[in-house]
Image (cartoon, rainbow, N blue to C red; front, side):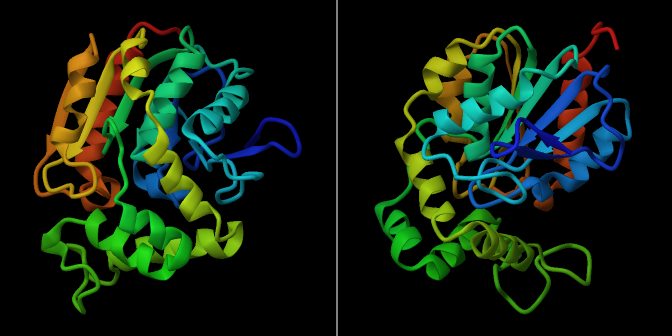
Length: 279
């Protein structure tokens, strides 16, 4: 389904179930150079277990109208404007990496609507190495290779011949690379450098987490090389209602590396924050 008005629409995957505006809604916000599909397992589970689900494509990503937002705040403005008219009684904002920063800013814009915020692979500040920033502009193929190596747990041996997954027949590292390549092909070469520059420039995370009027769940991967768990500690310390889950043997792409761990943590948190909310 699409949210918003023509020319500024945001696409939302509803988890394989018709969207029910009477239910509390879990809103999924992906990270840089991604789309809603990174949440496919978690979004489908929650949609089939009593929740409304909106897994978004950010502006200029996937099926959403462009242009790509030049800052975390600009992306949050678009998302908040799309969510504001919904009738759902309460929202749980769930963001990964860049999406975690956007979730914080959306919560700041819709404080009375947000029952909880789940932040996966977050950091404050979310700095990007100069070499990687330059590569996103000048050598995007190399940048995507670097991102995929650093985004996955070292035990997966990124780009090795054997599958980077405990199940045969597919490789989560190659799948992630193909997703990034598809975003570039469909949405344009400017998405990658714009997303990473937005992460690098954003300085509002601590203020946003202090402004939260709801509980926050922090999910980190013990082997995350992009946003190691210690990079979220300043946010955890600044949050008055925080819960922390650290997933063992898990890298930055935790939704595919440890889908059940992410699913269980989100399902428990959703049950907590939506307790007592009338459907």
